[in-house]
Image 1 (cartoon, rainbow, N blue to C red):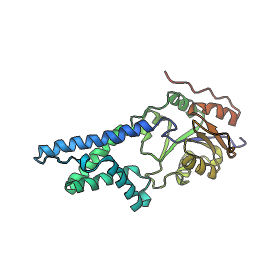
Image 2: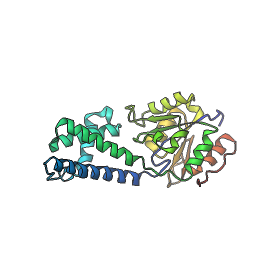
Image 3: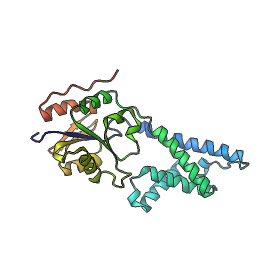
Image 4: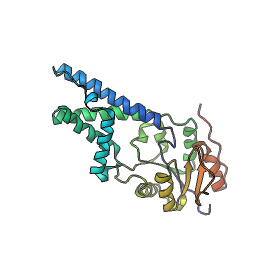
Length: 257
């Protein structure tokens, strides 16, 4: 690279950890919690929950409601926390709760959701990798998801954390990238973005002029990648790429103890 590399921005979900299992456990877990706790509360008040909330509104209905809200409020389409809580509040109202109770239970269910959502298991190489990179580069996270990285141990490596959905500009909108770079004090040419999504990570970063490390376990050899896009099968391969890009040796990412 002719321009010195000063900053590295990271996607989170499916880049620093596998996200599918986390989301399945979170989705089913918080919904079952709401169904159980709400039924107990109603029974205590002499209002047996028949049918139960989950029988009246299966999980699939919750998903359909969120999609409908995303269409109705396009600026909020990437603010998943808002969509979820608004959908729950509407359905709880239709279930028979007064507005205050519906708001209270929707907020409680989302608190349970967020607790489960943060039970992620970063790849074992990630913590030592970030610790080493933080000594050389300015780091930021940019996510469309609703993980607050500062609720995780890894948060200490990210002085800048951008929640793109909450700023109403989900990737591939360039604004989250520009916000991160502005706070890092780096130009696009001085930065590398690391992410797994071609549409949400590679394309917007490339259009801005950043280098991109595209993490994808499987890739056909054709067509060749655009200039400035570098394929990695796993984030653990990042030090090798950085050695190639900067001409300076970077220790390999090894799993933590």
